[in-house]
Each structure stands twice: as C-alpha cells, then as structure tokens.
Image 1: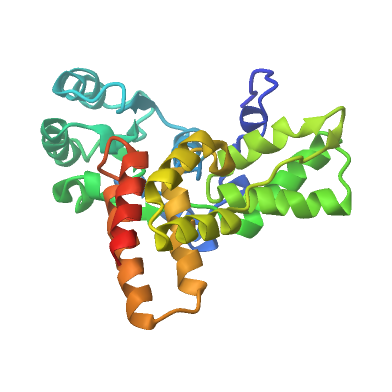
Image 2: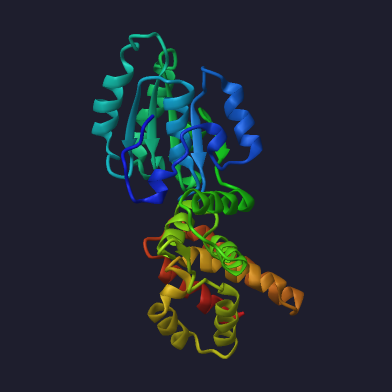
Length: 307
C-alpha cells in the first residue's frame, strides 16, 4: 500500500505489516496463529500503543478482506449499529472471504449499542468478524468481552526506542551520544504512547539535527508534590501544577502513575506507604470514568494529605 506524502512522521512511518509493528512477541505469535480465520478480537491499551494500526494491518495485509471502519467515539448510537453495521454484515463478500468490522474506541459505545452488537456478533459469525479497540476494558460490557479474544496491546520500551532511532536514521538526522541518551529519557517520559514519542521527537529535530532542549523528569516533580502534601500546602500545589502542566505534558494519569512508583521507592513507614499506594491506585482506577482527570488528581492529593 502506497501512503500519501506527508510531513507527519507518525503517518510516514506507520507500520504496514505485522512484523514491523511494535508489539510483544507473544501477541505477534497469537495473531500469526489465526491465519486467515480470525476470531472476534478486543484490543485494549494506552493511547498511541498501536491498537488501531494492528486492526488495520489484520484487514489490509493479513486477511486482505472487505472491512468497515467506524470510530465509535464519533458514531456511538444505536442507529450506527442498526444501519451501517447490520447493512454491511448481512451479505457475503464477492470473494467469499470474511468481512470485518473495526470498531475503534469501542469503549465509547453506549450500553444499548453494545447490547445490540453482541447479537450481531453471533448472528453473522459465519460471514463477519468484529475487531474492537479501546483504552479501557472495563467499559466494554462483559457479554462482548466473552465473545472476543482479548489482547493487551503495547510496545516494549526497547521497541519504542529502536523505532525512534530507526526513524531518525531514515530521515538522516544527526544525533550525538548525549542526544541519544536524552531521546531515551524522552521516550520513557511518554511511554507506552509511541505516537506521542514520535511526535515529540519530530518537534526537536531542527535543521537535520536532534536538539532536545527539554525532557520530562517527573521524579523531581513527584518530590515537590509529596513535599507540599507533607506540609499541608496542597492548595498551593494545585495552582502550581495547573500553571506548569507543561512539565508533565498535561498527562495527569501518567503523573499519578509516576507518583505511585516514586512513593514505592521511598524509605518510609510500611503501613503509611501501603495506605498512600492504595489511595493512588483507587484514583488511578477512577481515571477511566471521570470527566476531569486534573480534579481526580487533586482529590487524590487531598486524600494523601490526610494520610
């Protein structure tokens, strides 16, 4: 498949084959074992980890079949299921191959839509398969989960670094040893969002040179957060974080993950550490349901202050 010309590296270097995709070896073996008769599939994982790209590789490169792509976050109503999807799966393809429906961001489907979808998956299993992708598995009803084979899709850190270095090499970008080390730090700060890693890397490429002038070091930020928590200055902390959200790229969920890991490594009373980790884990679980992740983070900080 020939891609249209673009200056966006995330599009120019989007994988077109399974072997080129950054996923675990175990998941790669599972996909290859399906051959040309895949089951219904559910891919979940963090944004930018390759879920949608894998779904497209399956239909375009492996199966080479007719498929219908729907972004469920935009078209999440019952009418989409009854109209577009039912009309597509009701008939066999001309070449006799399976038809595939890709429901991207399926965790955005309404409950009614998901309920209708489960009947379609069974009724038309002889002619069609469904590939669902989403960031949050718990937002997919159990009836759909039971009808799909589930895979957690994410690159390894090594794969992410190697992909970024490969792109720099293909683009003829000069990199010093120091800049390569900073690139690894940059990748770690956005991992497992490989899409974000590549976008940020392209931003720092100027006049055929990689010049990373800013990397995210959340350890220092986590120390500052815990310092404010221990002194009861949480109101000041919220103001600081909102004004300086560029320090962690406004990724409140990742900052919470970093804070949890940072706390785990600290030397403190075990009972206090366990209580803090449980509190942060609880608010991490809520990240998938809340509308405002900053408020969720601040609520977590207030609970930590009580501990």
